[in-house]
Length: 168
Image (cartoon, rainbow, N blue to C red; front, side):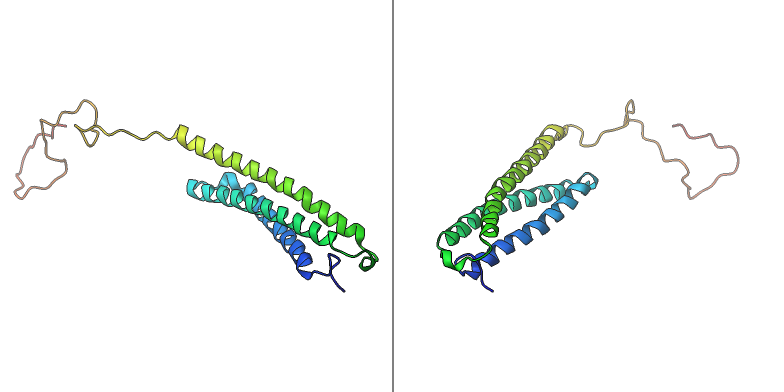
């Protein structure tokens, strides 16, 4: 048993490695997309979108490297070394070529989602401008000139008899 790509085991390991990791990442990001509307924390949503954006960009580049590497190793493969499996090798090269565009499209979608989140935050968030004269808002139509004691307070000397109700 040997690797069909010029007997280079690294070529086969590279192709298998990025393919399996890409599949696992796709499953993860599919689950994240399914639960994305339920995530209420804006920071967590931002980090997930940035992770999708970064991973898609990295994997677009890795598929490009894989396509170049596998094509180069296939070009150096001797015809007498390939008894069976030539179609499989060409299929792997074709798959890696189309994966560049697939992951590039995922990169474009992730960037679109990132820009949409940034624009939503910029348009919907309004920074409140505090008034310098009153640091705290007060109840409307109440003047602070007539201060009254709070109700239901006990005084040290309790008098017997009638007491008028407090004025509010």
